[in-house]
Length: 101
Image 1 (cartoon, rainbow, N blue to C red):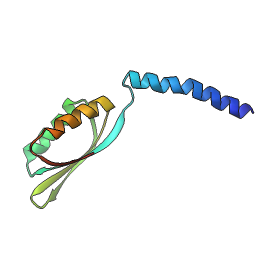
Image 2 (cartoon, rainbow, N blue to C red; image 1 turned 30 degrees about the vertical axis):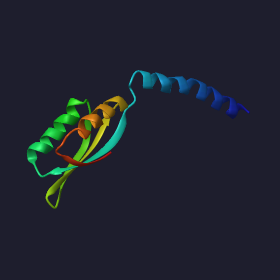
Image 3 (tube, rainbow, N blue to C red; image 1 turned 90 degrees about the vertical axis):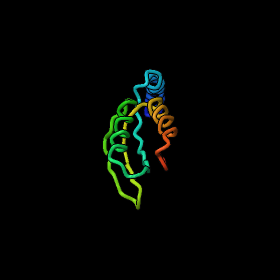
Image 4 (cartoon, helix red, strand yellow; image 1 turned 135 degrees about the vertical axis):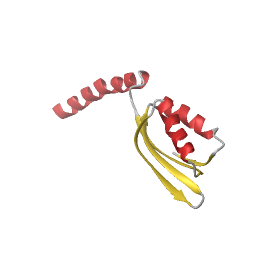
């Protein structure tokens, strides 16, 4: 009985905090982006800059050569709104052949 009451109180207290966190855009989300483009060191540097310009924190990144293409993988942290704006930018980039996120 006491455990049930404690659980209800915890839910009542924590639920509004999650909503406040979303409202204040404090909550961050980690996403992994896989981007295929032609092999180019300049393009790789441009992609890194794009992530930083959109307020992303790059945790890890790597490059792989696949035939005549380059696969760039970025693990980044950012708010959902920042991720959405970044995706809009990446989708309009004509040099990007494939994008997975």
